[in-house]
Figure (cartoon, rainbow, N blue to C red):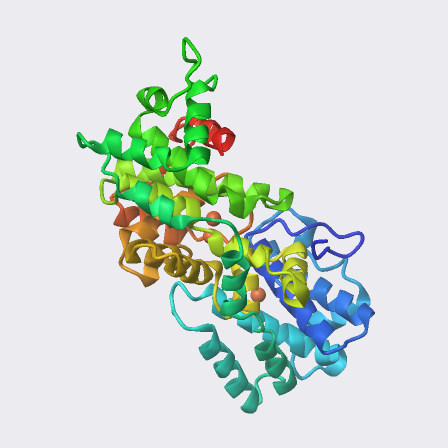
Length: 412
Ligand SMILES: [Fe+2]
Ligand SMILES: [Fe+2]
Ligand SMILES: [Fe+2]
């Protein structure tokens, strides 16, 4: 359940909502670890959720959240101590709120001041030694980082997926004389892939005049590019077999289609590679969903409480799902350009690759991304500029044709 405002109050409806929710979720987790009484944890989350109320009010937001008048007395006391460190009424809860807010702001400043999470935690510990923060709280903050990259890799390596087939499909040039025969030969080597391509050619989207039953007939209908998309989608489909992962699968396919479209508009990135990159861009997120155990439960709990994926990942892993996905792709022998792009798709400014910028833009354009990260217009504009595109590119109506998405979701 999301961190909720106090009874009688209204949800945050201001530019700070994402920030306030992040602070509230982190503060709540720290408080539970420090074994604060449940009533104090609830009051702390409430105070964190409203810690920018006056700021929101000053900006003229109409939400009652813009006033902290509805706060419970305990939450009001915590907020008062948070703003006036010499006032002791807030106790440790106020100290936690100070650390949670400073940490969150530091993470939100990463586009302007890049740093590793370890470095940020070290700085917080150093500032605690200087008396600015409670050292017990900053030590607890450092201890939150408990998910290891090896454990995430293991979750995906156990699954029946054959990325070598995807890489073989990628190697087939789009428009050479031999492309058709090469794709036909690839499909002939795998009955399941051949069946998927034939099924797509027989679908209502292509409406063949008579039933198609051979690879050659199917290829004549959907072409090398159509077959390649079906093959790639089919290779990675088993990763998302569980019903709980269907949203993530739809997001992968949508991002693939939109990445290919942006590659075509930009002309700076290979369209076939962009499609594959889009399809696997969030494979690190998939690994986190499959983690299980106490660490998996903690990840799921913080997500359910309303914090976005990238924030929770930085808190619990020290890296985001892009970094985890890059390691998975490396273990599948993916080309370095794709590995690098997936690694940086939430921080495209950290790498010169236009493919990272393209993935960032495609993900921002996707309707199915959910709350992966707080939106950053600065990052998006920079990514689009790098691709020679403008925000107009992502306007409604410019999306790739819907039939392609439907076709791929049905084929795989
Ligand atoms: Fe804040
Ligand atoms: Fe992502
Ligand atoms: Fe994504």
